[in-house]
Image (tube, rainbow, N blue to C red; front, side, top):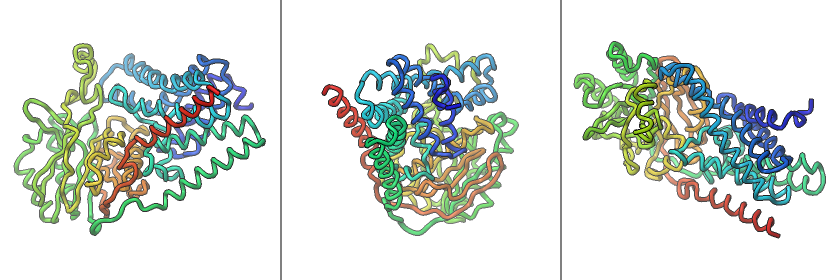
Length: 495
């Protein structure tokens, strides 16, 4: 059966499902381009704006209900939410996120323009604009932004240091629009031009990958990333605390690295509650190695609780407190309305934390300036670049045990791969159950521990200095490009 003869809504849903396989852990990055080309073709054929909106919604629902199904595991398996609430909750969240492609479908149809302008300019610009809005609204949820699918094997990843993940998304969307145009016009003059533009975009991406945006500073240092593999349902139990501390003590003392990094809340205690003799053991070992340890724990200050890290070793003790918190997981939005939900329905330890503040300095440890981000913070490129260009290296500490054996951990690791590309810095990821990895500034995974196993990942890493264009300008360049594309389309429409 010809795929384009399927019911338009069924086809939209299937195309959204297909797009998921472009992301990690599957990594078939051309599929995101192909799936978006199917969507754009369906939008072009839609009878009116309302139909285009429904096609966009079905595409988005297919994308998100499959791509973020792991939220059910966090809610039900570890958050103790009853199945009768967790399953509909996951589906409703996917349905809500699908509204963004729906709005994109409606908006591109209402703007109107000749077919080639809609496919090459309007649809790509509005698609990425709505991705960008999704990354901002209600504290943002940029997961499955299409640009991430290109990290790090795709030629289009070369655009990341220039334009960031949304710029990569824009090139993906323009490519999809041009492929859709080829389908619509076959091999006439416009088709030949479309092939030429697609080839130019992808070849230029390959060329950009060869640019040395940043330069090495100093000599490589040896690092160790600890993966304790503490089950999420055991992590905060009092009877397992001694075992958790012993696991990380053992892993630390196995390492001779100058920099040792423990995961998010590796020590499920307040900083002041960590036993002094335990702290002394870790500090002495770090000093013996001539370096430092970064340790995940909770912190308390003036009655406020924080998700944080602190350092021990040769350098003065320093800390970082997570600033971008997860709604319902780390803070309670609309407390008078939602407070009962956290306290009565979900079982999330430390579910109401305070923000650490935007302007926090890099950690000066092991001869490097480390820009730390905790868990979900690596999803926001415009926030990761704040400590740059001062920072020489990026570190993400996380705990994806909340999502079991799902594909969430590899999707999360792909976010960090994009941050390495955007900044021209290596990214070190220390996680509880995986993915613990060393990511090169090219975005490629250099070393990685198997998931759901206790272990220590040790390797040599290099600090870098300098600024990529994205570090200098953030998302301003791509937002400006979207504005120009839509402005040109509007002028053509009026003509």
